[in-house]
Length: 292
Length: 323
Image (tube, rainbow over all chains, first blue to last red; front, side, top):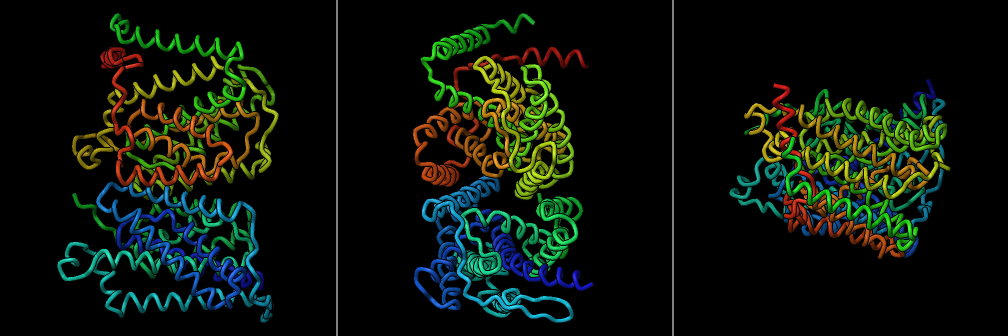
């Protein structure tokens, strides 16, 4: 029983990271119907910025956290403006290939600058454990969980209660109509990218704290899993991404805990294919008939 | 049948035979050094891979990112069979086993996933490629992460040449056949194709399986060229490298793929010492090509000189027989 609870705790903390990355996928997909393939690499970039602002600039952790989010948001804006904006009217395949190109570009640029070696994320938070009910909870896990939850609440607030959020929701439903209503469509899309990228950076720093290892290809697996999470919950739906993130985190730790670590990734990708077959719109999605 | 012997076909056969003997002479007399010979083999393998992926992406319009997974099926089948029977026969048996496995896997994967539209398919195939890699990583017979080494080096110029010509012949005829035309119509407008009575799922599955088989054959050839097969050689990056070639040459242009492979093989050779710069350059080119010329450099056009045999008549002849 206590082992099960332990797995639940581990699953929730890694799941909250997946949820944060999945939010970026889902927001971008919701607004321009593009799978931002480079999102996993934006996450990786955020980890590097966080790491460098602690090790090179000697910033205190909370400020480094904010700096990383801001710089990564800027990267998201640049990517959107330079690479994706010219392709808004082109085919899905073209947009997706561009996204793959962007992903490749970020990966290899970081590789060229930082080298292929694995860096260690500075351990700025004391590694303390709390034991209760036979379950061991790591301080870092608690920080990850509560930071993610608060970021999600802030995001929900922005999307539901502010003028910007209303603009985002209206652009997601109908670009032309929102433009006619005086919404600046281009800026709204750009801001969506900025928010998504900032969340990815936050996730990246927390993964850095938790797993310590930082390397140029670290974005691939979490990126893909977060995408699975987004699809699982229903891509384009913000609460769906959160539910999906936690579910994938739990499933993954359960498979690793009771089965084999080797298969945990295969199981997650298997779930993706299963979901796409059974209910492609995801848990919270509605079936939308395709218009001709 | 006598239409097969038209002028165009005869010219193309003459060109191919000339290319074969010229290179055969150059290689056997070591005018082409072993280093350049490896580059030629690389180009040959990637032409086969690129043609297969172009059938899926360029002709049928389905973005697949699991191509390297199917390549690994062929590579491992060949490597395992060659361990017991290190001859050319062993290679062909391994290749056959690889083809059968990849036919089965691609069918199982394609049937459900190809009902998905566009971008979901890309991610699903990416997942499939990763699943294949993880399964290979965890199996005993494939020797896990360290892979299989000391495979007998059987690659020769006649071998790669004949498989490249075979792949070109099959792909070009695939594109021209009724199946190929159905696939092109799916790419142009899936709903319209469906309305015209084309069973879109069926043709997507056929194209996907065709590409998977070519990838598997290329994988077997890969195994006997580089002596070593490792799971890490068949990751997403390999799939993306093939994608870059296809996009470069033009989505739907088979001759474009061939030209692009030569070009990229050449650039790779030149930029050998600057591996990272090379990848950055390719990524930039991928983005720029998509923004300014989304159909790829050559579009769907083929090279004007019809280099390869036109067996259209043969196909017609066959169809009449069936009816």
